[in-house]
Length: 464
Image 1 (cartoon, rainbow, N blue to C red):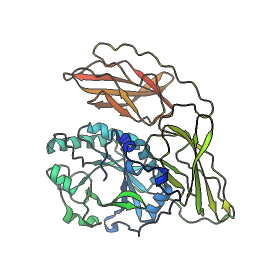
Image 2 (cartoon, rainbow, N blue to C red):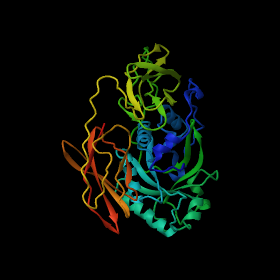
Image 3 (cartoon, rainbow, N blue to C red):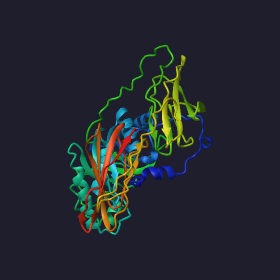
Image 4 (tube, rainbow, N blue to C red):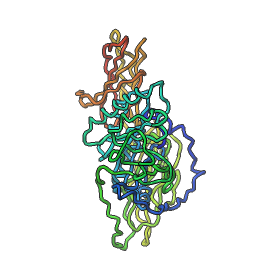
């Protein structure tokens, strides 16, 4: 499994070197499935893949290529909410059963990490939430302390009884950093060992940590591309069946060109916060070719940025950031080209210029009152409107504080209700608002000398 930090993952994506359009073929080559593998039926296990934020949004053609290769189960990382939710949605829509995983960082609150992973995956039919135990930044913790912290994460996970909680780890990691302890052998295990054996029946040769069947439910046996997507390959038991059954039979030929395409991504009014823009549309039966057209807004009018020919209705591109774009698509079959889709207008990064069409004036800011004695001050954002996927909640540092608690509420019309609370060692916390448009407010308190101080004033902000 690819290592990734749950906090700051979006920044990591933005920092990675990205090819320019000139470095990428404008004509997409068709995806080719691998010879199908169907898992380990004798042990009720299917062929699965796990994907992370680094793969970005998934296209229908990529997911269908997985299916043709025998994949029936997808495990999605929860590092970047924008990517997590798209990958889960695409996997479910194409007939896959799904799990999610949270990469555990020893230096942060494990309960908070697990709670945030569930929030990012909420609404999707995941069968298991995997606690990914492979961080080698041990933060000076002994293995017994790490076992106790894993138990804390599992306790948080068990607050969601509809989802089973499991551990993902590797044979080498568990032996080296966890003293090969058997104290967690009561928890379902999905393990990594790249020794060319794909079956769960390999466990007698791979065994560690005191786990025994039926607790051993998955094996990761390779990290290699599939359908041009960087994946890890698994033989794994799916806890629950797929929520969607896809009819893959080819319908009769209508004798007409394709209809206008739907299901455009990015969706209209979306804000793309990651480094890559992946344009895609729902594929239509019997289409043999697609065109994807991207236009950029120069503050006064739309200008064509590029048009790509595609065999599979998607294109990854890296246009200039902090701008507004308009995307359309169309398909061709044996009877000709269909009409262009309705356009999807989206922000790529943080655009601050004149927007297409009429736009309301920015909301006035409210002066922040002075903090009460002992309470944090300098809250941010304060009276702002947030259009980006994430927002950093912050306060001024409190002398000698060892922890901060950020309590977030949502509401409308001046009435608010509790939403989520985070505890952190820093006077800031990245928050990914999923409720839009919505009013939010938060307050902060600090722990000094082992005791919590008074709450700050509320800082209110809106999401759009």
